[in-house]
Image (tube, rainbow, N blue to C red):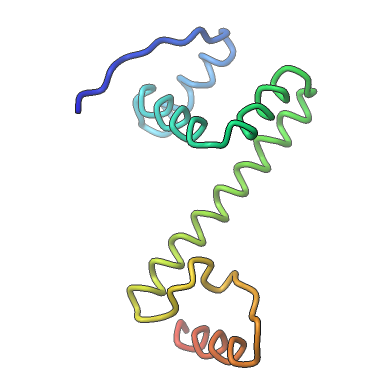
Length: 120
């Protein structure tokens, strides 16, 4: 299916940031905007409403905290997804949280210890 262009009104500072990110990452501006928009629209309405609220009411420091916090969570999710894929492909656990899951029993602890030893 072919894509369709949409436009957005950006303040000069945000436009400068967008162009700098595109140059720095060697990506088209359209890829950055479409990825960001998809992620935003995939969030629950409550999460989106919180972001709208914070954009309107939070201080610059609070907005920077939100960006860092969300960025760390994305990195954690990425790690969990990659680890889960590795574990499944190597015949390990199919637990979507991999090593990040809390052991629930002595057997779980032993299985985790054996998995870690196999990775070395």
